[in-house]
Image (spheres, rainbow, N blue to C red):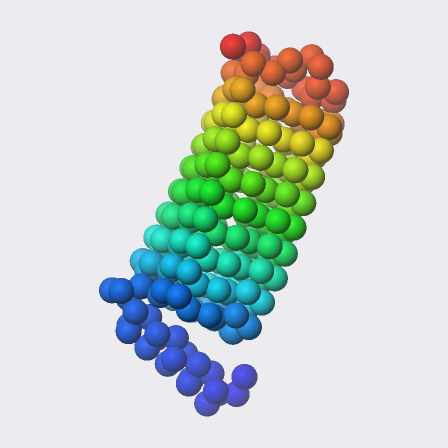
Length: 223
């Protein structure tokens, strides 16, 4: 992008934010656009299509996203801290190294996405479906998961200190070298999962940890 084109693009994004900040972005088709490093923080986005778009570095801090679609989108290093996501779809998108700390994620579907090294600390993920996605090395410290289903998902090397997992399903997924410390895991099913080197320390759970091959359990409290 030339200097003049970059200036026009930046001005367009600033005007878009200014014109829609109060009312929010609603019923927009932003597929195949370049919104990299745009600033939408504090805005409401409803029924917005971001399919096949370049959104790396996009600032969605404290935003509310409802019924938005992100298919094959580039969301690397997105700032989505303290955002609220409801009924959104992420399919085949790259979310790596993004910040979703303190975010509320409700009825969201995440399919075939790369979310490695994402920050999800102190977030709430509720009634959501995650499949064939990569959460390698994610920080879910203090996160709350309820009624979340994971299928064929890579959860290796996640840090889950003080995390809570209630009424969840983890099916055919990888938990190798994941660390659960001072966590709570209750009414949650693990089926067909690998857990080689997984650490569970000072954690409360109703799981039969002795039946989980490869796990290292220290001071686990049965509930």
